Structure formats: C-alpha cells, structure tokens
Amino acid sequence: MYVHNQRANEADVQELRRAGGRWLKALRTARGLSQRQMAREVGAEYYTFISQLENGRGRIPPDRYRAWARSLGLAPSTFVFNLMRFYDPVTFELLFDEDGKFGGDTSRFRRIDAAVEDTPAKATGAEGAEQA
Image 1 (tube, helix red, strand yellow):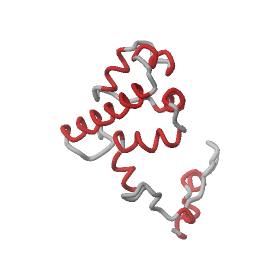
Image 2 (cartoon, rainbow, N blue to C red):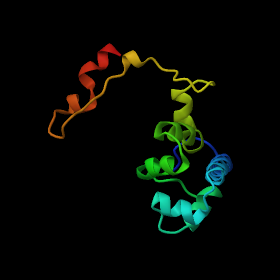
Image 3 (spheres, rainbow, N blue to C red):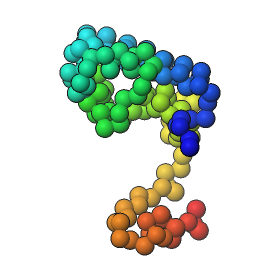
C-alpha cells in the first residue's frame, strides 16, 4: 500500500511538512491571529490542531482549504498552489515550471463528467484515448 503522496524518504517528507508549517505560521501571525482564533475561523475543534500543523505534524484536510484561505486573506487557488509545494511536491512539479507557471498544454485537457451508470469507456475517457 502506498502511504505517502510523494516518493521521498521520511526525513524529506517531514522537512517539507515543517517548512509548510512555518509558512502557515508566518501567514497566521501576519494576520495577527492566535492559534485559538485561527482554530475558530477554520472550524478546527481544538487549537492544538493548528500547533500540530505549524510543527509539520499532519495536513490541512482538503475540504477546509477554502476556510483556511479566507482566514489567511488569500484566494483559495493561491493558497492551494502554495500549499501543494509542501503537501504534494511531485504533482506540483508535474503541473508547474520553476517560475510557478502552468507547464502543461491545456489544449489536451478535457473535463470528463461521467455518471455512475455510464459505460466504463465513457467513465474513464477511454473513447478519446487514441487521440492523446
């Protein structure tokens, strides 16, 4: 079973998480928020959760990204873009170049909205795979 979302050794993963935690703490303190205030604003049950994140232990649940962005005064896309550098660096590198510009060719992208009852070919997008 693949546990980590990036292929890095445990020390590298932990250092990225600590760096991400320092980034989150810098944003929080720049907004003048205590850990208790931040916890309240993002809907965390305990302020100690904020401390854990800022110390590199754990991750912000994706369903809370908008609340965190709002609390830190950032657009959600800006918040997630920067957070991804710490939480999922492999995906980040695949999507963005060194300057943070999208590095892919969006003309090859297409959104797939498949209903559950659709055929497997439609659900996976296999009908257009030859074109790729």
